[in-house]
Image (cartoon, rainbow, N blue to C red; front, side, top):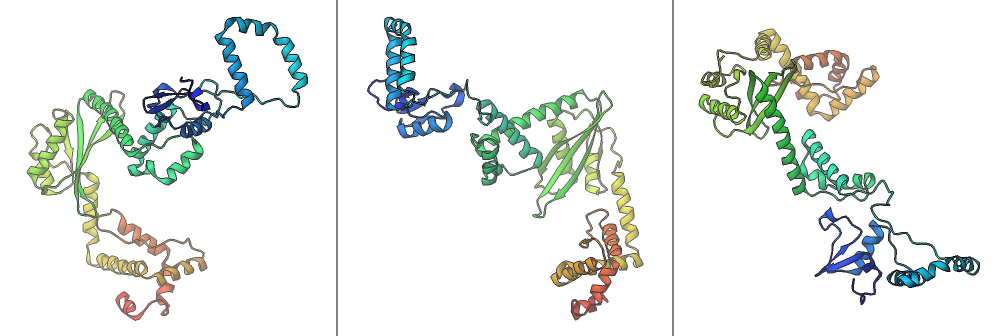
Length: 386
């Protein structure tokens, strides 16, 4: 340390070229507490905030210099120890009312604050944050949000918020580790059954999903989603067959897949029949989907279809009219019913017709009272509902 430097911070820091490094920080902090330019103000704030080290008074500084001079000169150190008892007794009498507080130098070794976040705890928090984002399907921007930063300021005040790029690296590492676990289980399986389906978002983007099902050596069933990726090609049998074969080869299970279960779409059935390594390809479709098709066909009968259409119009009226919705809520309160909104049926959602009819039947009295009130229901809607 250069003797020409008069600032107290250089007792705990060293300068290397144009940067200053804190000696109290761990070496594996990746220059976490490096102060560009060697600014003494930045170092002072860092020492006071992180290490609770304050500048020494003049009296303490002179005592520290004297002690350092004694250590550098062994003869003076031995002489001072022989007269320490006498000097101590005198100082207790003369300086009893002007005793200076003793400054303790706090380091990582003697720090007892449980809220302090070292490098190992920081990495554990980073990995747990990446796992939470993956499990809850949260946006990566959550790690840099103001709410998360405020939360961590209470849980771990000294925790440094992880950047999005660092979270992406840990997400990739988490993906590779989980991928290795799935590959080991698939490798140990003798036979694998797969299911596949295509679906679309509200933005009309089409996706394909392939799931593998197996029973391990302990007779425990396991299922893994092998892929869910965007499919920009048309859903022809050849394109779907190529997507299935490509997924099987990627996971090295093309020789183990014995069956692929799909819905009743002709293009998907033809795609499965084109797979050369699958042993069973003769119309093995989903049983639940078959039952749903039978129920859907039964609901298309004239009388049943008319009833469903009228109920759907009633629900649509309450969905589009705030006045009717609030009137229904008030009627439910007056009749002692649970405040529930009506449910609209959807052609692509199973059991939605049953849920719509069941909710209407439960709230039939409240619904009928609102529909009978002409101050709530205008005349065009009244004609349509009739």
